[in-house]
Each structure stands twice: as structure tokens, then as C-alpha cells.
Amino acid sequence: MKNINITRKITQGMYVLTTKEGGCIVDAVSQISNGKNPLIAVSVMKTNYTNQLLKQNSKFAISVLGKEVNPEIIKTFGFHSARDINKFETIETIEVEGLNIITDSLGYMVCEIIDSLENDTHTVFIGKMIEADVYKEEEAMSYQYYQEHREELLKVTTQKGKTAWVCTVCGYVYYGEELPKEDTWVCPKCRMDKTYFKKVEETEINC
Figure 1 (cartoon, rainbow, N blue to C red):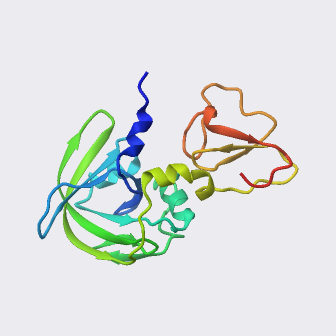
Figure 2: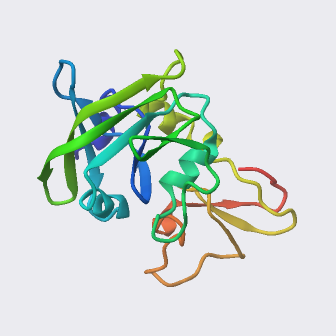
């Protein structure tokens, strides 16, 4: 039986990918050429609304997240759809080349889309870097670090005296003695199934 967790050993970071009208958290970002205007590749799930937005726009930006990033940035861009909310409403940004850049980041790069590749589940967008800057000389958040500290980063508070079920992926809280019985029921926030929920006893406050 294959153990796909080995992919977590590949050096990957945590980034906020933005384009006009939206953005999302991504981890599959690579520099694929050198030079004055290096090429940057980013992989985005086809089911993600940001994928659709990228196909309607000519540029994208990558904000590099550090270990001390405000967890609300991960929650906002990782577990909500731009179809439903304005992700930039509560997150501080600046505008560069017409795109929103996360100010609470280590820096950014803005790329002009020059090509894309399709597979069954993802689109790989290839961009030529046209602008970039470094804000902080701090350690970037790796995908492995995120996985190892996910519960801490997505820490939520539950109501005392109530039995709660917390989604271990996005932190959504469902109150009730049991989860809904329907096999098709999924987390309303991140769409993961019931196996990702952890029961929090009434005596617990945080999870």
C-alpha cells in the first residue's frame, strides 16, 4: 500500500495566490527558470474558484507566508470561496500591478501568465515574473510545518457546556451530540467528510 505522505518531504511552502477578484492558499509553487524575469509555476485545483479566475486574467501574485503569519490569513484564503465572500475585506493588502498583495508576508512576486498545462485535477499556470520584493528576512512556512502545527494554527474556541464536533481541516464547529447521519453530509466550510471531525467533550474549551 502506497503512503502518499512521503510527498510532505518534498520542500514546499505555504503561499497566498491572488488574482483579480479572488485568491487561495497554495503549496505547489516552483521556480522553473533563471534570469531577469524567471518563470514561476503554480498548480491550482480545477474545482477551486481561483482556477476559473486565473483563466479570465493575465496575471497572478504569490505572497510568501512566514511561520509567524496571522492564522486568519490561512483560514480566509484556505477555507472560503471567493464565490461567497470578499477575501480582501478583512485582510490587509497593498496593490501592486493591479493585484492585492498580503502585507503580513515575507514578500511577493507578480507574474504575467504565459502558458498553462492541464491534467485530470489541476491546472499548472506558468508566469513570467514582472515585479517582486522582500519584506522580511524570516523563515518561510513550509508545508510540513503547516501539517505539524495545523491544529495550533487553526485553533478554535467552542461554547462551554455544549458537545462540539470540530473539523480538523478547517476548524468549523458543529454542535450536537452526534454528527448528521446522512452519509453524504460534509463540512459546510471546506467540504471534507465526517471522518475529519473530532468530538470535543463538554469540559473542553479549546481544540
